[in-house]
Image (tube, rainbow, N blue to C red):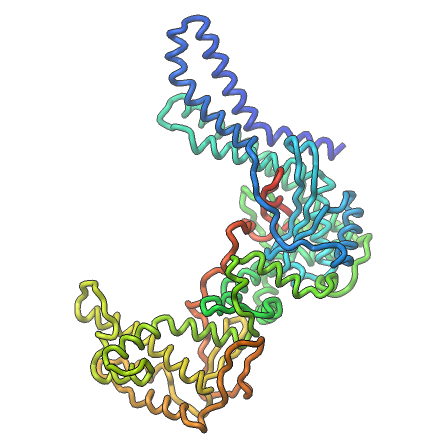
Length: 559
């Protein structure tokens, strides 16, 4: 009876706005037809104002019925390749009182979701899809993953996915209509007022119903897996989302500009999570207490308290250990899901280990102006481009000429601008030379992108030497001595490698230098991991994508 009541409520809520639009359009057309029977001349005058309004409503209703073509994304997880995962999904689908999905896709989102393709505005179900985020598999235990999985599958049993596509279409039709209304037309202004208030009431009721659906799915997860595992899973979602976002934005793209990606991305993600232990523990212990008024999910703290109050022992057995243990040879599958989420260019990047990535990414971040500055110094001095040539140009007082510009600037402004650019270019050239000579080593330094350290035999303040070289009265002696010393045979430690293999080819270990390490990536690697044009990033953290009818983005699922 509850399921029937919920279904009826969904149908009524998602049809309020389209029904109101259809009713108004029908009333306007009927009034104009009636006016024509009374006075054709008057009817023509009325039609001048009515027809544009009817067209606005008609276009909005056409959006409701138009096909939405959004392909299913992610990497397919086939049953013959991952039988253990499929067996778990089937078991917990039965526990949730529903049929299993027709397919499973692994995505690179810190999210999980369910989708149901339907026809006739949700009356007929054709195919079910389950989307699992690779970060969840990497960060959850098997029991926690089973709790999230059961929550998602419970949306099928409650038919929450059935009319999600219709609701999505209804919102699109409403938004299209409101955006095309002519606010200077009195009749359309009245239409805007009517639809805005009708939609506001419907959306408030829809949000209330959606929150009840989430609570019902939470209860299904707790009954199947147990309150303890479900609470632990929900507490883990915010730490996974936050750490994954930091990983994508900073670490994954550390070598992107230089043409590299990590060979073991999820190994690095695991080390990042370990390095953020204290910060993630705070997120875990203090889930969000407030939710956006428009959020279809109750606040996480309320959901956790409600699940904990059930004290459900759980009725299903779950394998011990990490969720990754449910997969056969999981790392290639996770890697494929990550590549699928990036732009196609990602497949052309060379894959290297993390120490190599730190080195090539760090050098790339420091050498943005190096090529330009060295080329200008070579042109001014008539010598080959090199750090020594650049130092010769600085000794000759050519600081300003090293950074030419066509923009009119005051002499002081021009000189200071040139000093900044030349300093960056010189620093990058020196670090590259010292790295080639083995005098600078690069290493992982989680949670930062990495760090570089000058060998202990060169106890010099490198930034101070570079500052002295670009001063008004340049002093390049210190840098020359450092470069000459590093270039001698006793200063070499082997070449830095060509990154042709997934290893750092330098033979020696990481020395403990006398110079404090410099973090790599502060203000450098801030760009997001490039995503594919058809990737859907869930709004508002984990499990917040809209539903679909036919082919649309995924449905909101439990956070």
